[in-house]
Image 1 (tube, rainbow, N blue to C red):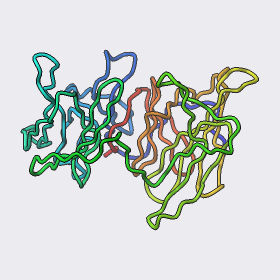
Image 2 (cartoon, rainbow, N blue to C red):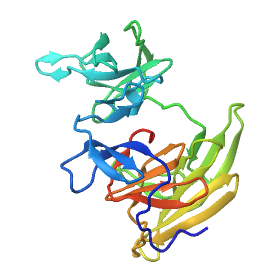
Image 3 (tube, rainbow, N blue to C red):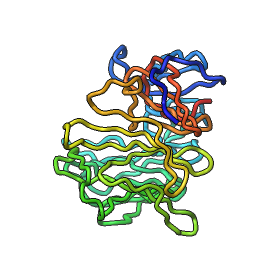
Length: 306
């Protein structure tokens, strides 16, 4: 299935409101907002929030990793100061009211941040530059702090695992940290039993993906620097099983396709499909591979469209 040569703005067939961080050039900085469908119009939120919590119908001042699984609480680090010395305090906050429920003081003078809030507790790590070792867990009910590791935080591995395959003679590298770091060229799936299978291996490419909600299905962006032209090549793929790959479209860095505005780093999956942000537009990609340009407003989706 090929993507269309041009992508005019089209209306979806349902009504919902998508919380986004508005990053369009028309806005000043990053602002919380909603895009309302089917019209695709943008309404500013104006609260300075980073995540919209549908459970309490409020914008929160943290990202979604700092929100409890039930959406009723969030955790945030505050009050650190190098001078006069003031240690970081971790606040567990009632998401509905903004009132503190638990406040815990970190045991040393390093600056700390919250990196996760799961059923087992709040994960807290130092946020210095360069990164420092040490992982703490806060009990959000009692405020008890427990050091769980003297090493660095390792996020739990989910269903989908990006792998740098040693067979690939031509890895793609990221230089974001200042040093070249090889990027995944293979995506494996791990099921509850622990069994692992390779769904896609594409030597010479950097694979970035989003999983659809529902039965296992991946939307994959494959990129590489073309050594012959020096341009970046892009392919957009639908992966429905091990080795079952359908190319939806693609382009070279020298071309100007209608969907060049797609940015795969700012997508979100919900029951409608995958919402994908561009700088000045928003797209919805369905599980059948169909893509629609649904709004002329750019925005990073931060929760489901309801």
